[in-house]
View 1 (cartoon, rainbow, N blue to C red):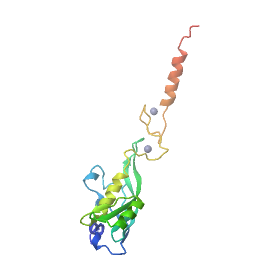
View 2: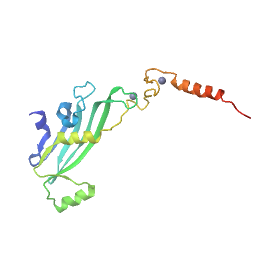
View 3: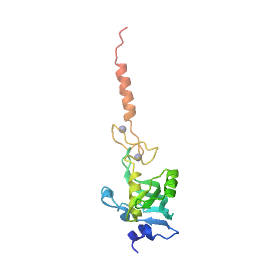
View 4: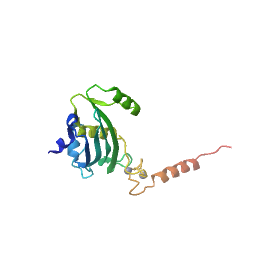
Length: 184
Ligand SMILES: [Zn+2]
Ligand SMILES: [Zn+2]
């Protein structure tokens, strides 16, 4: 069974006991053209750990679980490349076609969730995980909340060393003040 077949399911064929996963999914399995800007070969990438299940409730199916992985990103403050932790929950209700029983409608109203209708019953779990990955994507990330960033004057990485730009600005302001003539 290929990697992809493990995650491509047909709801009509799902066993009553459903499916469970506790697996590492290689980045190459998740990647598609939307990953174009990411280097899937970067050593900062880790596989996606996916621990989840698909429950068979007869008329509807619940895909639930958690995923986590590390992704190479550059820090928004100091520009350094680092492995950014990403994780998220999955909680998706799937139903076959459009028809729902009254009982099921009532149950879905209770949970406040609209099911995703799959007319052909084909569920691609990798596709769902890929979507959740991008939903969790933050445009700006920092290597650490305490990252000091770069000096705006000289560009030095303030996590690695220090400069006296800040002091110089203060000195200059003081010098300018000293030269100021106060006319009484
Ligand atoms: Zn940083
Ligand atoms: Zn500086």
